[in-house]
Amino acid sequence: MNLPDFTDLPAGDFVVYGDLNCPFCFALHERLFTWNLLDRIEWRLIIHAPDLEASGFSMEDQSLLANEVFSIHHRAPDVPVNLPKLRPGSEMATRLMQGLDFLSVQQQVSTRVSLYRALWVDGRDIADPDTLQDVVVATGISEALAPDQAQAEKFDTWQKEWETSNDFDRRIPIIKRASNDSLLLGLPTEEALVDFLKGSRTFYVNDDACIFQPRPGTLVFGSLENLWPLVENIRNSCEVLHFANVDDCR
Image 1: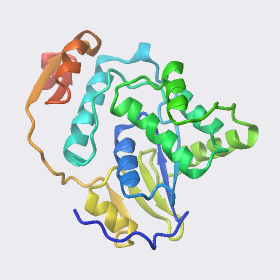
Image 2 (image 1 turned 90 degrees about the horizontal axis):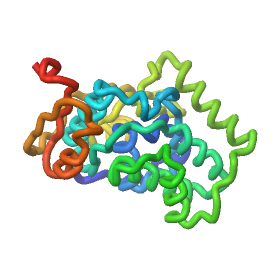
Image 3 (image 1 turned 135 degrees about the vertical axis):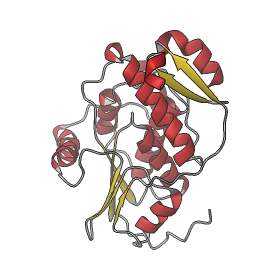
Image 4 (image 1 turned 180 degrees about the horizontal axis):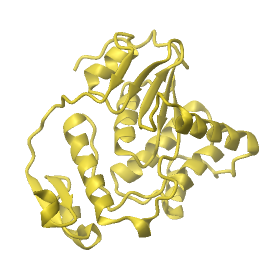
């Protein structure tokens, strides 16, 4: 689509609440990055599943993750996203960003892009310290510092805002316009996102319409961990739909 001119978009008027381990947040982040808007739109990282652990990632969780990635392929075909082996907890990566809060906006955006892509493009575990170290090195940061009290309090405030707002309904991603409290809940189509940013819409919840790009589909059943050698080979060329068992897909 032909994008309008966003040069008059006021800096700081739009705020996004998103999590690093949410594919819908990744898709929105990629769009705003491609449109060169992340230096004017504040991205507030929150943790929507603080108790998430790899050891507790059930087959139902695996199915939900696969279906979310499937949805992205159709709702946001402009964004390349691959199915990772699991959904890692995002707390460690978020704490890393807290420790890098002293960086310029451009450096923070670059690091956040690298974290999102490490998980949703390369399939790496962003709860693994080695992955985080690789991101730090690749983005040219000499070291990540432990967040000081002010930085930690800022992130904690964002978390509390997201958890306690009745308007947010604990959804992600969310875009809020500070000047008039307009809200966008969930991942919109490109057209709806443009309308919201240009002020044509003041409220938006996930649009059912999506752009369909036909790809072959493969149904897989059972533990995604055991099936991963197969899934890893086919995930870029077809849609992977995962179910815990045959009965669940009927």
